[in-house]
Length: 103
Image 1 (spheres, rainbow, N blue to C red):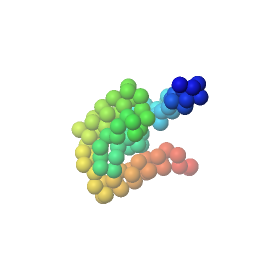
Image 2 (tube, rainbow, N blue to C red; image 1 turned 30 degrees about the vertical axis):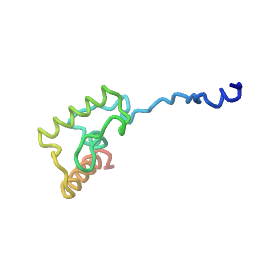
Image 3 (tube, rainbow, N blue to C red; image 1 turned 180 degrees about the vertical axis):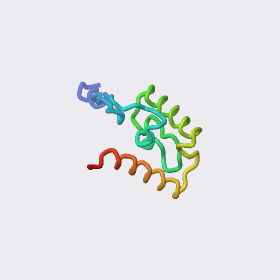
Image 4 (cartoon, one colour; image 1 turned 60 degrees about the vertical axis):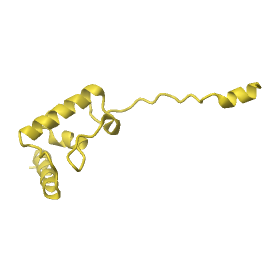
């Protein structure tokens, strides 16, 4: 085999790109933090996978536990429908509008 043929058969090396986590270092993963938890729930109410959310293993576990706690405490519903989804989004919007609003 020629050297030129060997080069063609080799796999090209791809560089390692560091994944950036959607959770900032100062953010707390807690069942009360609905705006953060809401990013990791699908429209059907399912917890999204690590591959889709780009979370680390530890962060994914904390998110899953906090979502389950919020469901048990009736902060988040187990099953979503259109009406519930609108109510939760407006609740989150109102919560942050009060904190950031000017006097």
